[in-house]
Image (cartoon, rainbow, N blue to C red; front, top):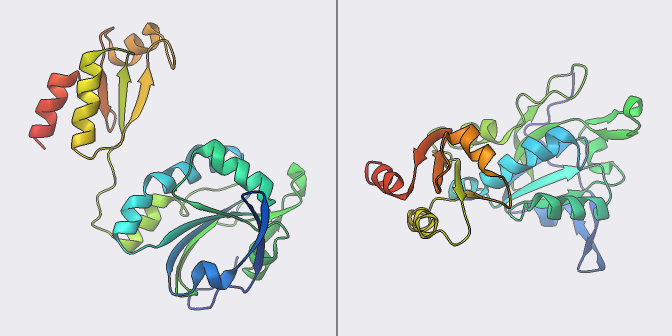
Length: 244
């Protein structure tokens, strides 16, 4: 079993970071004092679960967390600062603070430094998340101690359910579009005006007609999907928004 440190102060550690081509030492105190902070720690930058799910969802829910009193979201890994900086850029995760625990000091003090020698990783962090208020750990979600890299409780949605059980997560919206399409511009404008974030997939750039036919059954753009449901073009999107 891994230690649960709820009610305890976070470890006092200095993190060596690289910012604007300069070395900047960041202390635990500066990260956590007089703040409410979510930390999620994971085995390694650029690894599959971390890159495909863990980081993107925390970044997507960052604004929702902040509406419910969270000052910062920290992603931590036993990697050096150069790797963490490149990973943040690759993930386009501008709403998260990436902190390198390069020597594993913080993770070791948390009792969550584990051997990943079988993967050639050496010592790494076990996957977990926690809510820290003014330097004191209020809640921890530690993945179960079983083989592999379990990802069951340290996700962003579990943390949101703890902090704000009634909170509405943002909609998952994708817009299939084409450059120069006025109806596409209208659909995107409707979403912007409604304050709804979306991913845009551009024909002949991100995908071909075959992909659009495969997922929407049509060639015409725009095609708007919301939470897995095909809404359709700009007129149908307008009707959907009015009916919300």
